[in-house]
Length: 60
Image 1 (tube, helix red, strand yellow):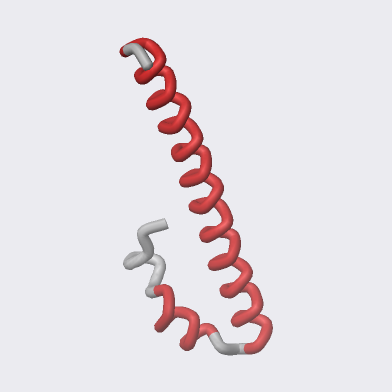
Image 2: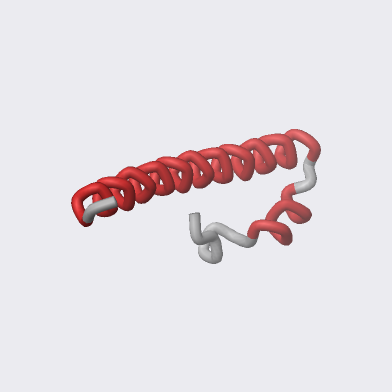
């Protein structure tokens, strides 16, 4: 494997990992939002806020 092939391989893997990270982040945010909606319907917002934090503490 020469340098050009090695760099192309690294670039391809980097782009794949970046896509996987974006997908994981998307689904994490979606799951958290579903948790909030379900908790609001059940009247359990205090429990969900304790789990995920308040709007000021959230990192997503």
